[in-house]
Length: 349
Image 1 (cartoon, rainbow, N blue to C red):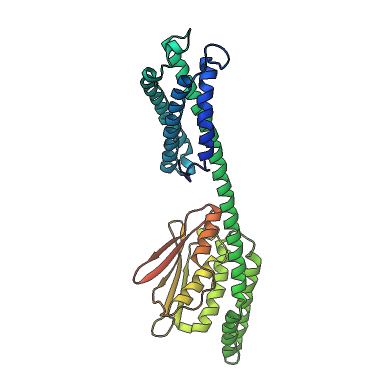
Image 2: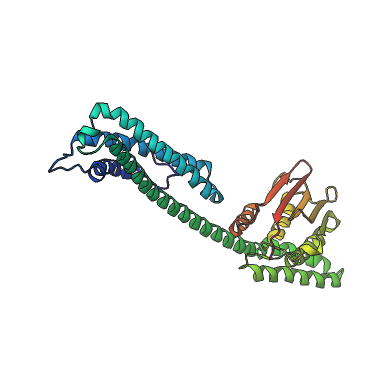
């Protein structure tokens, strides 16, 4: 038997030890055979028990693997255990009785081998022994499997937490990197003499973006209203830089503003749209943010650049992982020849 991920551990050594041990214990415990006095324990008693135990063990093992593959979701555990138990019960009784009858004539385990017991007694004790050890072994397997799945779940949670923290820290680093700062300072220098009032507002919006990054870096979710407020500030910086070449439209109903999303997600999606698409007077970029069917959609017309700027490490995978950490619906990505759209779940308080 090769190790299988649906078993939860490498059970080959367990099988090598447990199968002979069970075959040894069944004649002693359930049929009263002894080594030092009658009725004597002989190879003719051990061999049938060993053969039946091997067949029952291997068959039930594959039933467990099939059931765990077929009903892998946690929500289907009860259904899996019910179906698995019925199949294993039927298989154990069938294998034990069919093999018992076949081996009776070959090894002579029945009536004459156990004085004082009728054939009905032997059949009853044989089936009881098979069921008892099957239930015991399955309980051990299920306990180890659940412990293994629990460990994997805990490790996955920790991995996602680390990924979420890395994403938030990387977002902070991205916003203060020299390239981002240079672009904004360069934009500011171009408007400060021509339009001082615009320059003052630009500095205020830039401060809003930085302050938001610092405030939410440790949060798992924030109000959509707060995220949209910062998105507007971020869009203001970009529109001041690109002018009419960039059009950002935000249309979200008021009743959705109290829902929650993961922080910095809209800013990341806006940044990706700018990074991966041409923004020019010949090809203006239009970004739309709107709510639909319980999700917030960020969509832009698709006009990919031939060469994409160096990645900052912030992207859809980070947003997906943070939503996965919260146990909510998945982030959806839709792309065709004309547009690119990301739908992120809106969470209720």
